[in-house]
Image 1 (tube, helix red, strand yellow):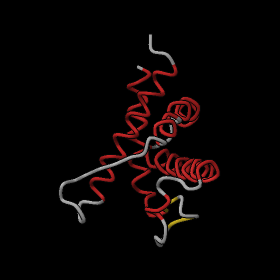
Image 2 (image 1 turned 135 degrees about the vertical axis):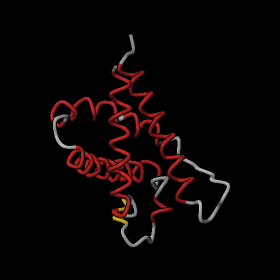
Image 3 (image 1 turned 45 degrees about the vertical axis):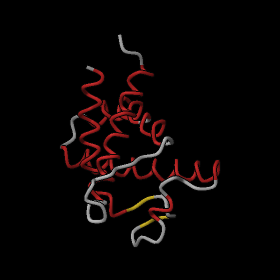
Length: 135
């Protein structure tokens, strides 16, 4: 039997792996080696996917996929901003803050509004991973 902690850890692994792929693909113009990266801080942040989907999926599981994707993307971006503010308070700067600084669609250097479509698509992938993790 898989415990809640283990399911959260699996979701964290999915999230970090997805972030490594995303950063590799979005920096491909600069580096054709497709080097991707993440931050150790992201593991507990992505672990929040498990309780998030556990809470939201029963309420939204019947929604059409575009509505779920959009709603999830908003929730993810709000959480990105909140965890970024917490990290800024704790360690002085969120790890992704330098990468977002000065970008046209950056909010507080913690959230990139232009990443909304990527978060919407990613959220549906995370939803699928959640369904697989809970069996």
